[in-house]
Length: 207
Image 1: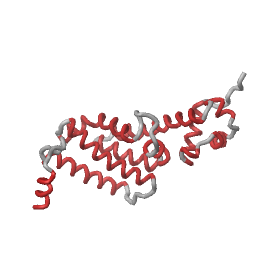
Image 2: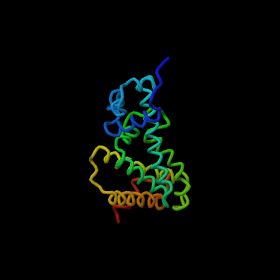
Image 3: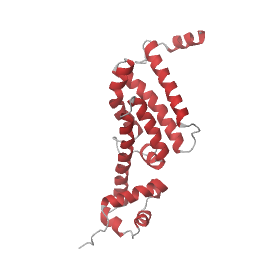
């Protein structure tokens, strides 16, 4: 009979998550996990069998942490701005978890940066339509373009190359938001991509 494990799976996953937060996913091994638990590697393999299973559990735990940030953003008065700022906050406060979820090869089609964007896009679409009086397609275009800026800023934060404060980032996102909204409202066909680009730029340069 196999010996009874003195740690629960949750305790072991929590320990693995602490290792990832400190050393990144590449630093997670049976040895580093066992050291965090203060034991040998035996409980790790008894509980999970392989480190691949452990890493899948850690990935799921990281998704849960991220979901907490996303939920907080959705509760903001302006939900689509809130989720963007919370995404950036997640990058600042949980850089290794951000790297695991959004800067590494995704584990399946349900996860990754673009999957996260599409999920939140659906949730904030009604607010965008209501506030800006735009169509569903225009709301999706607005959020997609704003999200790409948010993801770029968050990624710069994680790699240690973002010189902007949260206040400055808020100003950047506000500027992008105004630009996209103004284009949707004032350029016929912008929302569908059918507008005359040359004519638009000629008009801009004329003024």
